[in-house]
Image (cartoon, rainbow, N blue to C red; front, side, top):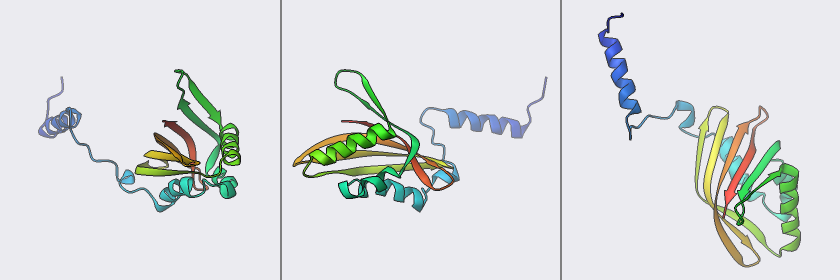
Length: 153
């Protein structure tokens, strides 16, 4: 049997306190402030979402990107980057006006991974729909890219 030393006892109490319900554990230093480059990608997700810059918008996503959203019938729609992009292009072709705004954006970064949670308002031809989304982002070595989008109205 190993004797418990004072440092070992203090360490154990620290673990118990951190694991206690409601305990606040500070985030790692690399999550405290998202980089400017990461914020720019999230801003560009909205700024470039226009008919005339849709191809630039597509470049924000990884080639392996997926979009996932629940359907009204209880199912789930999952689209590849090409399927998602084509759906947006069809929307812009049909609409007179179409845009999206983000509200209450919360970005968390941990090393080369990040998430951006937000409320959004989708505007099309004078109507608006509210929803929630989460973007997952990866620092690809060539900059931040969007790996996936989850959204629901």
